[in-house]
Structures are given as structure tokens and as C-alpha cells.
Length: 369
Image 1: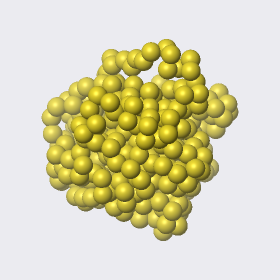
Image 2: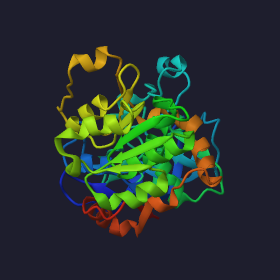
Image 3: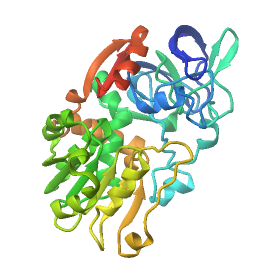
Image 4: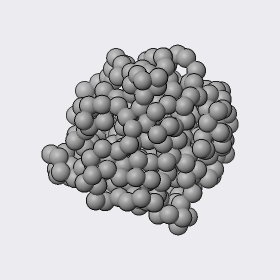
């Protein structure tokens, strides 16, 4: 069949809107009509050429939602007509990682997914007879995609595609870091470094669990109002505090935060986040992705006195299990996604969405097919 897609033919080049060929689903796979997809910084990271695992040509995109239109042999958990969110973090429920219950990092298809192909080692996309690679197992910048059954979450049918597509990455990553990685408790004190889309979702995750103090740290004072809407109780601009940022935050939290969250990807900020934790029990969660080859450092004293550094991927959420739950939270009014979707564009204008992101004019731009 044919599908319209925004194809990245090479790094550092605008996406090209073309019609390409898509093979149907093989055993254990499903064919999905993508209805909406978000434009994320991770997509640009790969497109920029900075991603060491970036491969071209490929169809980018990993924040999608749509409808199952066909299923391959052996598929038992999905059927035609199901509303779904494709997952870049699968949940096979059978591998060592899934069975351990200690991580959400399923390893069932990691090797092939990282090579831009389906589990059988081939791509379902072709352009002029030549293979076009998949991206993160999802490639939601295409109107139709094929995905493994274990990497698709079934969701309720009344959920709007243009909103819940964002749950696939930004919403779950931020809220999940609070609930499943930090396991933060009611009454805690927390600091969130970086008030972009991820940071705002961390904030509403903290509000959701009943945090007592939620401090947002960002160089842009223009982000204060939105962060307060999502639950921030205090705003700190590092430019106004200067070199005394960590002591200032420790004092503001009465000895240090119970939990801090880095949403910047800046290794210097990661150190500040750890050192702003409370002695004896403070935990710092790293969410932001640092540049390739970057390293973090701190004095060992910070760790031997009880502070903990943790990393998180997809907020620690198990995709097929937890994503439908977060969709329910949105539909029940427990979390806010509407205010995070600041722009909507047709596929033909997808490159404008990247421009809006770089100019700081959007929290999340969504492409509707």
C-alpha cells in the first residue's frame, strides 16, 4: 500500500513529504493508521546528526495515536478498529527485564529496533524500491505504520488523538518520573530544573501525588505563569541567584529537597540538582538527555552522605500497562494536556513545527493527518 510520510533522507536536511510504499503486517505485527503525532526534541536530535544511533533515510516520529486497520498472524491482544498508541518502549511481558518487575526497559526487540528495522530484520517502508528505515519502532510521521504487537498500547475510543498522542512521550516521561521512578509521596518537597514540556509534566505529577512544595528553576521568567498553572509553588531564576543557587535552594527547602528532577540535559545542572537534595535521603532523577559523550560528576561526599542519583526512561512506565491508565487520568480530568498542545499543523507544514520548537514558541506542536 501507499502512505504519505515526512521522510528524513539525510541529517541536517528538512523533512520531505513524499508518498512511499508500506508492506502489510507480518506475524506478530499490526498496521496502524496514525491520526496525530507530536513533534519532539528527540526527533530533532536525530535529524540534527548528533544522535550516534541515527540512521538515514528514515521516517521519524514517536508520539503518535491512531487506529488498527489490520493485524498479522498470531496477534491476540489487538483487533481491527482498536484505538492505540504505538510505543518506542515495548512491553513483551516475557523477557528477563519484564519479568523482573524492576525495570520498564523491555529487551525483546531492542537489537532490531536500534537498527531501524522490524523484529525480522527488514523494513516495511520503501521509496523507489529502496528501504526506508523505521524510527524508535514507531515512525509516526507516516500516515500508516506497521508496529510489533508488543509495542502497541490499546486505549479507550473516546480519547482525542490530537491530545493523547503526547502521552506517548512527554506526558508519561514527566509524570512517570514522579510516580514510578522516584515513587514520590504526598507532602514531599521537590525541585524541577527546566520548565519545558517535560518539566511541566513533572510538576503536574508532583501535584497529582500531593507534594507540599514544588519549586521550578528556569532562566526564562516567561515560563512562570504556565508552571504555576500546572502546580508550581515557587519559581527561581538562576540568573538572579547566581553562583549561590544550590545553597539558596537548600535553604528554600529547609535543608534540601526530597526529590529533584533534571529536565535540561545539561550536565552542570544535573550536578546542581543532586547537590540540592536533602542530606541522608534526597533523590535526584535525571530525565534530560545530555549530548553524546558528556559525563556527569560530583564530589563522592554528596553520595556517601545519602543522596541518590537515578536515571529514568519513559518515566519508568510500562507502556501497554500504564499508558492506558494515563489516558484515563486525562479523560477523567486528573491531568492537563490541552494547555500543552500549543500548535496544530498538517503534515505538509511539519518543518514549521520544528521551527516553532527551536524558537521557543511551542510546548508541543501536533501534526494531524
